[in-house]
Length: 460
Ligand code: GLU
Image 1 (cartoon, protein in one colour):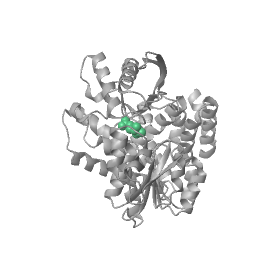
Image 2 (image 1 turned 135 degrees about the vertical axis):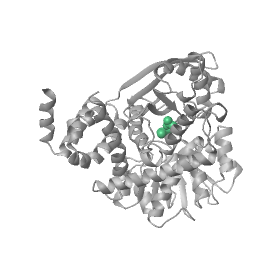
Image 3 (image 1 turned 45 degrees about the horizontal axis):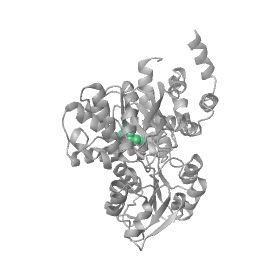
Image 4 (image 1 turned 90 degrees about the horizontal axis):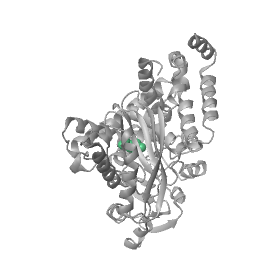
C-alpha cells in the first residue's frame, strides 16, 4: 500500500530533514508567496521537536496536509464609486482548517491584500485559534480595496458587493468572518446587513465584531489590544517586572493599538509614541488617548493631526522611524514585517525589555532571532494577539445561547484566556526542550490540538 511505503520513507529521515523536505515542497508549490512561506517556515522550524517525539504525525502526513488550505475562494467585487465610475476589486476567503471548529478569522481590506497575505494570515489563524482553547478553526479573507479616503456610501456599496459573493461560503457553523485591518464595526454592520437580507433570516453568529445592539459582544472592540497587554504583563511578572513607570511604544493607531495603549496606561505604563502608515507621533507627556480616539475612530483622519491639539508633541514623517524611539516595552500593533533586523537591533541597543506582537507577524524571522538571542521577552502574535479572536468565539457562544454577558464578565474571561495561553505556551516550550521560548511554545501548543483532531478524523 502506498501509505506504508511513505511511512517507511519518512521514518528513515530525521525529524529536521523531514520538516525541511516538506518545506521545500511548500516553496516549490507557492513560489510567489513570500509572506506565506515566512509564516510556514517559522511554524515548521518550531515543530521539529514534536516530530522527533511523535512519529505518528509524520505517518499521518499532518504537515503536508496542514499547509494546504481546505479551499481558497477568490472573487470579483464590482462597485460604483461616488463619481459613477465602475471599480473592480479582488475578494478572497481562505478556509484553511476546520479540524477543531468552524473556519474563523478576520477580513482585511487593504491595497496590499493578495493570495500570499491572506494565506499567511489564514495559516497563522489555525494555531492562534487553537491556542485560545475555543472551538474555532482557521480562516481569513479580505480584498485589495483601499478604504482610505472613501466616502461612507462607497464603503457601504463595497461591503454589500463583497457580501453578495461571500455569503454562499459562510455561516454560523461553517465559517465566521470578523474584522482585521480596514474592517471595523462600520464595515461589519454593512456586511451583516447584506448577509441578513440575502439569507432572509437573522443568523447573528455568522460574523463577529458586530454592534452591541444587534448581537455583538461587550469587550470585543478592546479585546485584541487588552489581550496583548495582559499577555505581556504575564511575561513581565514572571521576571519580577511590571508596566509601572515603563516607557511604552505602540505602533499603529487602529483598533488594536488604541486599546493596547489604553490597557498599558491603566497598568501604569507611559505610552509615548504611536503611528499610522504616514508617520509617527512622540508625546513625552504620555499620549492623550481621547485625542487619538477622536482623530482615528470618529474623524477618520491622519495621526499627524494630533500635534494640532498637543503642540508639545512631535510628528515625524515615515512610520518605520517609530522603532528609533527608546522604550522599555514595544508593542508592534500595525502590520506584518514592520520590525526588521535593523529595527530589532536598534530596539535592543536602546534597552528594550519586552516585545508584545499585537499585529500579525510584525517581526521578520531575522528580527525574532535578534530578540531571542538578546534575551528580550518576546510574545509572538499568535499568542499575544489571540485575545481578539478569543472574544469573537465568546461572541459566537453568546449568540448561540441568545444572551449577553457584561463587560466585566467578558473582560475577566479574556484575561484568564490570555493567562492560560501564556502558561500553555511556556509549558510546551519547556516540555519540548526550549524553555522560555514562547515562539516555539505557542507554535507547538497550538499545533498539537489541531494535529490530534486531524489524526482522529482520518486522512481527509
Ligand atoms: N483579525 C483578528 C485576528 O487576526 C480577529 C479575527 C476574529 O475575530 O475572527 O485574529
